[in-house]
Image (cartoon, rainbow, N blue to C red; front, side, top):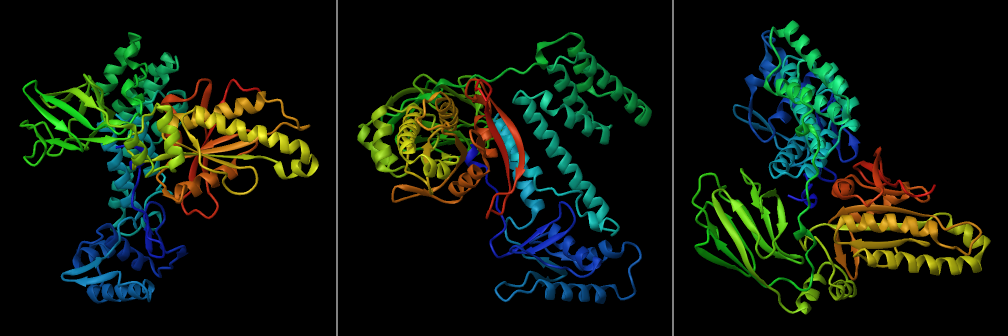
Length: 584
């Protein structure tokens, strides 16, 4: 799983969508649908929680009235269902509530229920965590938690069916929050999450997992006494409330803190050198030696797993049925873990994907696979393939330079950089001759920096003095943005006031058509740029997570909070890429 896989089904445009993670809300497109009575909303919520499954009438009656149903409960239920059908009737839409003995069923499109989106994102995060991709897991969990608007079905908690369901959903939320904090800790965070953890443990004093996370965060910040005090407080609360001592994890942490163990400190992962292999042509042939006894030739792609229909079959119960795939990409042959149970190991490191090099050892279960040879075809093949994803002129430049890249998938995500000169209209009006010279310097500077960092200038984007660059690696886009900032600061501009550039970075998949990119990621990047001030670089959440582990030297990320982007439905958590070495 990569950041390009950070997707979840969303409500269909013009269709119904329903929100349960907060006060109940129904929408038809962008319009709120009013559902009459509390009982009617209760019927609909019960059906939504079992969407696309038949819910017996008796179950609905129990949920509406508990142990004290009215005399004509079934007839009253039918009245509520009829009222719901009228409220949810639309000429262009099929019936939402179907009568299916022995009860009713809501026919719901994928992505139309916030609770299901939350669970889908949480499941994707679990898969990312299993492969050691904490950065992706953290991003997915933030998306999952963003589905919540408050306590689940908060306006229906007095209904008999609601309390146990709300409690179950809240437990799922807390589990996702714990997992997100685990991912943040795996990424080296400490001080940034202490306040959140203190609030969490205050509200849920019996949750030992949150206490343990707080201990680790405090210890990493040099607050050993506070870490021990947290454990002591947990011991007091658990004994007073439950008559129990802290569990094994808190006991182990107490010993580690007292011993000042390095095991609690963050150790950054070393990036594999394979992620910077050179593009000199689409790889043409790869040879794998399986358990030093048989060889497999890969020219297009191959699958590895326990099932007999895999190209490489491994007879090992610990190996998943479809465990991993090897396929050619623009950067070389890529091995991808297929959300396996026990993970894929390359040269001793668990990985969700890695570009393979000669001599690499792949371990899957008890099986060992060694990369023996890789052959490369003519670089012209590379140009032809790369031209499917970037303009041909860009492809020729990238291949001609032998671009260093970690591009994982030619059909995957691309990093977009949008720039714009702030105040250029006023400057053109005041100093037209000087601005003409200044903009020649600006254009040359932007193009030089983009290309030196492995990207390409697609073409001017939008009105005025904006520019649009594309990169195959998010890291390169971030480095280019920081360099543009520094170069603009150092440039000797001919205008009385220096040229100030604002920038935005976003990563996503877009459509290439007639030498230009189109699609939602491009529009989102442009909207993010409109939020930036002069000299500022703003990043989307996906971009921030992509570069968090490998920021340009002297740079840091600063969370700017959730922002609504003009004309776009989904808000975006914005981050500023701040250069700490830059003079303000």
